Length: 334
Ligand code: NDP
Image 1 (cartoon, rainbow, N blue to C red):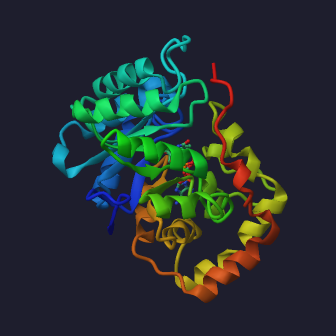
Image 2: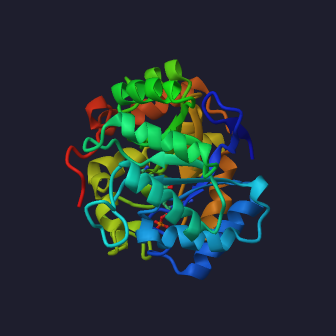
């Protein structure tokens, strides 16, 4: 498993991170979740991504329990704050000083840890002055509760404004966590150039487009039993944007390219995001340990330029590239 630096910082993280959105505390049973975490460790993954809002705290609890006996210094733990948690009251959401301070303490308790390596603003909060948010993050860092600070789905201007204030407050934003895959390339036009200028990496989510780029969903056929597209607890809804026959037909055209490289389509999808040098890690999900073992083989793969161009041709018009799709809710979510 190869490591990459996170932004301009000295922190090294595995280029494949195991993330537990929708799975832990929800779609999969706790014993399967723990087996997936151990499969990740066995495969050399040391970086894990979660969030306070995933399964309303349960995902952090499951991850903390599964990692409890590991040497803390050998792990890099990422979590996030912003989306509503707990009873979802007016102050259980957003990036106010109150919610950030309470959020980090609650995350650490659920994870059974003294600090996280990366604490991320899960979206931009239009309801809180940016100065208040950045000052609260500076204080979280000074208290030793998070070692580094990042953001998620911020647009280029928000990254610039946030980084300027962070530097005034004596720290730097090291990363942005956007959606990025061969089907969803909205960060390429604005977010990536701004991030390079600001010394920030991308830690990218849904590199397999939630499993769609593995090729297992066939146009005109029912989704495989037990897959995210059949998960009534939330997965079916979130994956639906990729489930049209047009997209699924485009994805099937990637099979010969994966064959030429001797890769599974899932591995091709993860390797594809890792070809971008501004990407520090692919945040990969898995509902079963066999998926983890398959996915980690994408580390270190080089895709020749000619095949990258063929992937573009194969997907053609089904790729989303509009930079305006990087957006946070204008009103705080309830
Ligand atoms: P992926 O695109 O990696 O999709 C993972 C899902 O695809 C798995 O849960 C599994 O679902 C299926 N899958 C995985 N491996 C294979 C395989 N080899 N063959 C076939 N199917 C496979 O990413 P996610 O959407 O899960 O997101 C990854 C992480 O990104 C999250 O856990 C979270 O940490 C982060 N994230 C961050 C967000 C943000 O707003 N910042 C938003 C969303 C995610 P199944 O078996 O059920 O079909």
